[in-house]
Image (cartoon, rainbow, N blue to C red):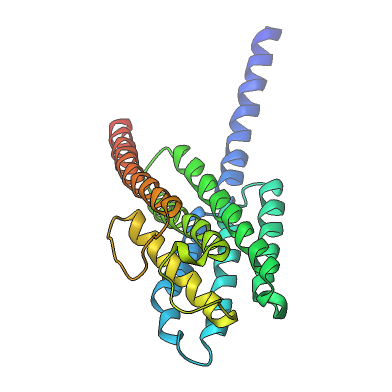
Length: 245
């Protein structure tokens, strides 16, 4: 009799705990909003900022949108306190390029190297989040797009560091860059990186050294591999979701 009473008490405790657990799970932040902010800021960078490139507010627009991307990246990838601290520290180092001392070569180089680590860190966390997904939802698709863009920007940051060390590695216009032309160069190598990742093959900027040519070839392969694996992953998740229903 005592055993039956204990079993009944345990069942009652579990049944009362279920609503509490489900409430806690539903109160967690929705990743759709996180990916939406990051994806929206990336679209603004690609479509709106270039309209102001040759104007007096071009540099300011780039700084504002760049800050928004950093904030959205921290928000999207900050799954733990450790991730938040690392991403915030990297973001602070990256913003050094936007300070008055940004024309100093060492400052720009530190900022550029930090951007490589930052965007790869965000990309890896997003990819891990996609790997843990159990169904295809809007945030899953948003995360897939953001992860793809983060890989392209991370690779573009590598190209930017190479261009800082050896400007002849790419067909970038002009002599040694100023603050304004640094931002223009950054946008150009990003465009080159994304066109390489998607194999679009635009030739406004071309690789002119063996290192950059090899990196471009590897990036193109990574882009194709990402698409293939991503489509397979989303299809399998959709099939599993339908079978479970």
